[in-house]
Image (cartoon, rainbow, N blue to C red):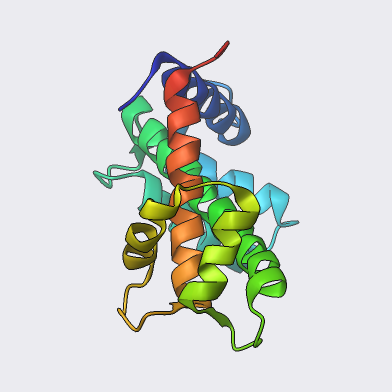
Length: 174
């Protein structure tokens, strides 16, 4: 679901994109503008500029006409924002898992038994006792009765992404 706040952010990102790549200041961006911009940023290295421009152009210019429409740039900016949220969630999830394992993985086998998992919830007061088994079943993807570091990471990552989306959907002043 897209909100006004999301649309404002995307509009700002589109403006930044155009400002960065519209070297002749005509208000539009073409593949040649992209190439020239990279050439300038890469100290005249034609090969690197060509490669970088090619990657960006193939990603943004969906109809491959050499011109970047507002819709193409907006989609690119939205996709990049989504990637950033996911990458940040991945990094934060790794930290969450390390902290959780350090504190609750008593036998240091890089997974939590049901007993260790319950200790986590007791210590954090998150979930009523009756729901802990249900949460364990959700997180324990391979159904071996333990929660591995990878399973924990996926769970934390999903929770962080869901939270970021919820906050974004609220918009400003919430």
